Length: 278
Image (cartoon, rainbow, N blue to C red; front, side, top):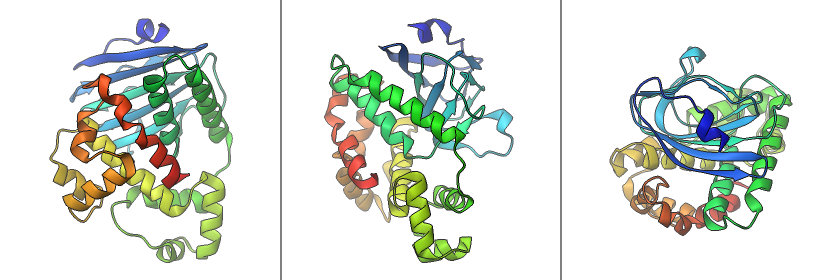
């Protein structure tokens, strides 16, 4: 694989190569950075989508951007900046066959995570089905289109607030009043822009952050529940089981670089995500 040959060594710390696949003329890779690692600059010369899960992690040249636990990023020319990994982090790389267009870097909505999960699970459940290359191509095509699109300020502001305040309840009426529009207008423009409802987007962020902490940060389940806005660990367990088909403890044990042979058991994650956030 080209990715296996071209990814430069880490600046410090340790990176594990978990697995990779050729996707027609593109590629997919899953790598794992141990905490306190410093990732290298990538120059992959083709469009690339990066899905990071775990952390927290941060990109030094982004200045004030806070540490993250989950992000999906698109780089049309494959130039990916260095990252500092403060916590254990899974990094999924979707590489296209050629450069794309659009902004040098685009932070994609959390809903793009659903398509990345779709690709990951397709590779694990049906590696010989031929489905994965089409998923990857569609994913990169959507990312490029999004990077060139003009996002309405109202929708963008609502998205930023939901991402920043996802652990706390934020009624639509209050969110609309905060932005200065009517609830009906906000709901319509948000759904048209991002393809999901306000509630669905908050759900996607909430469970994505929970998955990030479960897979990438060795902290107690009760702390994960609190960080993601659940009333207590019991509610977190019920909601996670409903959303993924697994308890938080089971989901954590199925992290792909820990128990690859069990990844097929969490097929319901994609199905439930599609239902709740589609």
